Length: 78
Image 1 (cartoon, rainbow, N blue to C red):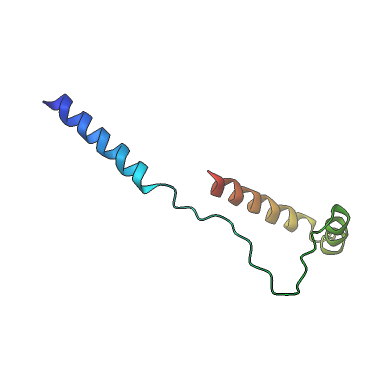
Image 2 (image 1 turned 90 degrees about the vertical axis):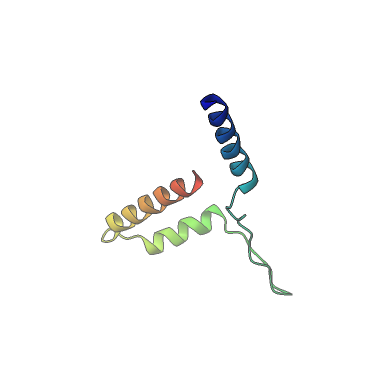
């Protein structure tokens, strides 16, 4: 009797998880406005931007910010 109850309970939990599915929404880019071109940044563009934004004075703060951002991204992927 107990065994039958546990099997039914386990099956119910599995069915609920299967029916619930993944709630995470897909990352969809925003649609472009008519006539607007999207230009992807190149590695050189990113390097030039980083050279302007990161200085010796704010290097430690930028490193901490990037580490936190990477940690949040890794948590959200799990």
